[in-house]
Amino acid sequence: MILPIALSCGDPAGIGPEIAAKAWEALRDQRPFFYIGDPRHLPENTPFTEIAAPADAIEASATALPVLPMHFAGQSAPGQADPADAQGVVDSITTGVDLVQSGQASAICTLPINKKVLADGCGFAYPGHTEFLAALAGVDRVVMMLAAPALRVVPVTIHIALADVPAALTPQLLADTIRITHSALIRDFGIAAPRLAVAGLNPHAGEGGKMGTEEISMIAPTLAILRAEGMQITGPSSADTMFHAGARARYDTAICMYHDQALIPIKTLDFDGGVNVTLGLPFIRTSPDHGTAFDIAGCGVANPASLISALHMAADMAAARGQGI
Image (tube, rainbow, N blue to C red; front, side):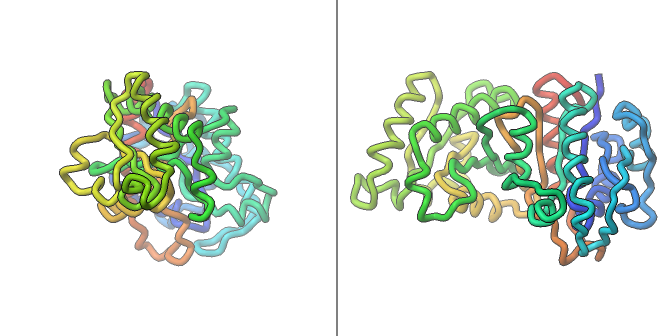
């Protein structure tokens, strides 16, 4: 059974509507998806068709962007966010999740939001998409993966100050992150025996304790437990030797200790094609790896490459689960 992908609209004042239209133009019915939002926000002259249900998107996408219409209360214009539209943005996400969980869509792909606008407009109290989706799904812990054809990375700690990373890194957090990643690689990426490479926290992975002891006291013992469970894991390794082509060929995903350790290599290798994937949810969620870009919204120059990659990845993950296109 073919199921389309739900695309939540994100902040309508950002580049989301523009790249949604460009992604449909590039993909048409190759990867059927439908936009959940107010069609007034789409770029002028975008061919679109309002649909009553996700199933209608399969046929409609051949000739126009399918839109599951929602009326937004505000007056957002490109580059000019209106907090009055905040509730509509949240409702778009919630609707997409409901449609995936009810089996009417194969996955949800989310366009970028602006957390301040949502907080100002409707009291949105979550740090971002990921935490909101976890709450909607009723799960306690999820994992952020950034994925591109050349590299997959998972940061164990994410949006915290570098000074706070050592205290935040616990055996439980590291083990949970690796277990969730390992399971997702099998279920969602079709990798029967995932190979994981784990970075150390300190330069040269601590160099035997001379540059830090976290590798000896916490990381290595945790990896030993996971290896005893049957996982293929290398490390802790010096992060500066993990990302050249030869090293990348030896693993399926790199587990990194903090945000920049993970994101600098993948954004260097493929700045426009990276995809944000949330692991550990009961449904598939992908997103382009960029923000709202208010500064270029409405200028016609936004690059849809990351969104196109996110839609392709959502479809491939759904196929791996046997539920969709």
